[in-house]
Length: 100
Image (cartoon, rainbow, N blue to C red):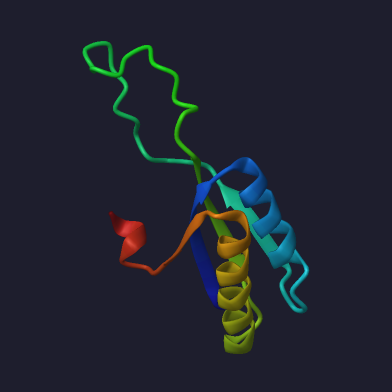
């Protein structure tokens, strides 16, 4: 099964809308929000130490298992539609992006 990973920069509502839309695609059985594993640079010496981090949109990664290449195509279409509707940025990651 092809796996599609998506990086969402937007509100929690945008992530929720995307997740629900992906789950509604026929043949999609697995949609999971993956924990943010990126280290954050908030240390005590940082110029942003103590500042609220809710001023910027949220960040999450979603993993989708598609049944075949047609399913991947439908995932891409849904991603584009939801990104426009929610005014969020959604990146489709490939294997090289995951190794950053």
